[in-house]
Image (cartoon, rainbow, N blue to C red; front, top):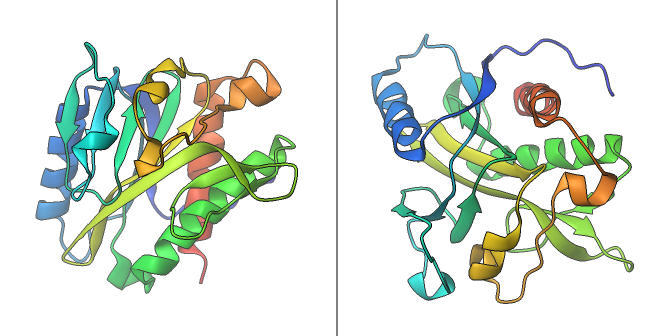
Length: 215
């Protein structure tokens, strides 16, 4: 694995937390932060749930079954969160690090692509469809492996990016992932075999911090 310089942001270790509790904490952190508040990266996994972005079309949630649904203020469409997924919530002051929103998203994707390359997986972006996709045989966007959506309040970000590491992928078949009918979804375990999500989470956070904090 690439050696990554220490992050300026505080990195909170990967752990399971209910989505509503985490969302409330992100909102409170962002509303209460000042110009000197350190940036933070929160690494979590959630019990099973579907989340809808601010402008999500509910028709893309095909069959919720017994899985809860949460409306959020992040960008993006519908996605699924569950055990074995590494979610990195990125609580950054964009004004202080002098990064525009569009570039912030690009840096998140670039960090994810670099992480996957360390596992010998070629991954790519997809135009007009934020997230990270495993490259297909022609080098285009194949199965989706990471979904992202952020919210910016007073120049500060929250929400972030969710990387599928070692999941039950069945619930993704109950949605049109990020609004795309038939979009296949995969995870790291399917591609490379057994992986330790806590180790992946640590590697992921350090790469995210390096890409986001680079001048």
